[in-house]
Length: 109
Image (cartoon, rainbow, N blue to C red):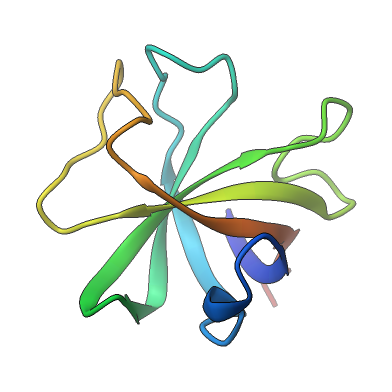
């Protein structure tokens, strides 16, 4: 699944780095969050605070809407630095919560 992540709120400085598109590469389980997290590999890396990020983690902020549903959903955006990996059982705590976004499924055409 391919997603387009747009800025929604929480960090105006981060807004200039969005929108971005990327493919969901996994949905790893999180040891300390009940949310369903999606690891997204960005088509174009982003640079924030002098660090280049090629991956982000997103999870729906809305209880009644899932990432990947027909309707867009508001998501938490966590930055995955190159020094960290995300696998089943990961903790979300080491990842920087950069902003809230809106996740839209990009139609494969």
